Amino acid sequence: MSVARDAERTAVVRNGWLLPAVAAMIVLAISLYLWNALAANEQRQIEQTTVAETSVVVNHLSAEVSARIQALDRMADRWAYHGRQSKRQWQQEAELNIVDFPGYQAILWVDPGNRVTWVAPVAGNEAV
Image 1 (cartoon, rainbow, N blue to C red):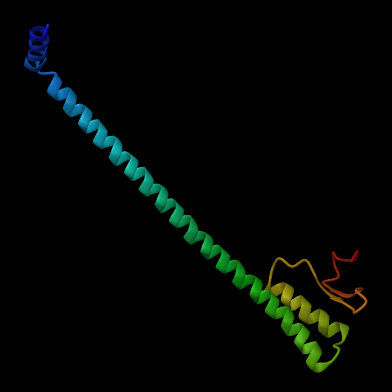
Image 2 (image 1 turned 180 degrees about the vertical axis):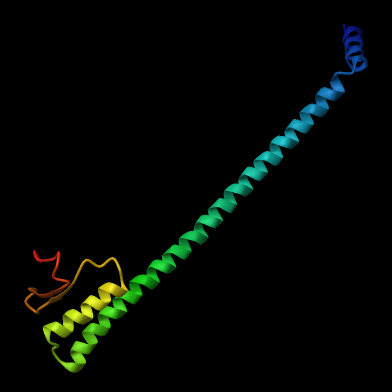
């Protein structure tokens, strides 16, 4: 039986399909390995790009919010330094902030009793 197997193996080798089959399997394994490595590299690049873009957006939003807060702080500082403004002066300054920083619906001045005293702009905010 051993002689038969050896003869069969010899016939397979002689027919020439074993070597190309092994070579094809090796090429397939290498191709799969490289494909997997490329896919992993692409995933890393996507993650790095996402982190970088997120950082840019966070920095932009942070700067925008900071600028808005500083503008409102300046309004409060002027009030503290110069004393109470007239309603017209306050509304004018508040409306300039609304023009400079789109997205505000209104700016309110609330008195120490938590009552809305002034609102700018009045149009569209009558209910306040």
